[in-house]
Amino acid sequence: MKKIEKVRYFNTSRNAEHLHVHCNLLATLTEEFAEANGISSLRSAYAENIALEKNLFLLNPAFMDTPLLKKLNIIQTDGYMFLLYAVEAYAKYSLDVEMKECGERIYYEMTPFHNLGSKSYSEKTQSLDKFYTVLENSDYTQDFEALHLTEALADGKAATQEFNAAYVKRASVYEKTIKNYKMKDVRQFVDDSFKRIADTLDAIYFYKLNIEKNADEAQKLEEVIMSMNGLLIQFNRLVRRRLAYQYNKQKAEEEENPSAENPEGSTPATPEAQTKSRARRRK
Image (cartoon, rainbow, N blue to C red; front, side):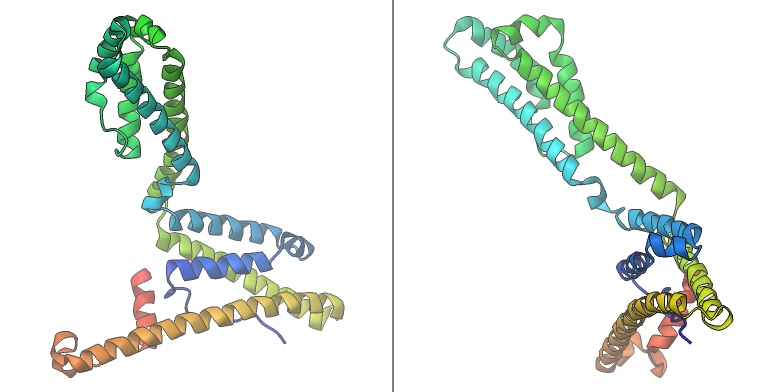
């Protein structure tokens, strides 16, 4: 009788390995299959925990650098640079005396806001907010109109506001996840969710095959169990090979320099010992 493989290496797998195998296992457990076998609630809990792990996995410096934020940052920077260079051109090079004076008045106020293009998202947006507040002063309204830059001023401000709205939304996800969860805990949530599903499927398969004698339903369950076992066997093999490689590498290094990492003739930990040690540290 088929049973879902036991997993020895969930605790010792790397975050990417752990997330990858669980995402594949979830894909194997389709919503239709879960509904047909009365495990929709178990699958939903499993999916929610995997989604949380995925969010945590992405919580690194790149988390705040999404394609949308990159695009909006370029737009807000272009709006600022266009306004800065246009006013500077009038202030320094215009042959029209009145337009040159208009440019000089505005450019003077822009002086503290030079070189914002290379600033961080947060610093740049905060500076640009103040930049547009200063330039929107009624003292400069006629100057902008004379230079035909009123629309450019409004567009630049709108671009910064749009970027900031997207940034705040992304940052709120970051803060909520960082404050409430740790990767070690969430990985355990995911593992526990999977174990509940595995135990339930094994029980349903046993019932269909041996009690109900429903060969067709048992066959459908067996196909899913075999697909899951294929993923789990490959996962176990992958992590086991990596641990063995690390063990052999460590052993070779200690043989070359026995006094550095192997004091008093102690032997390096085997992959099995590494697994147990890591598991204890995670508790």
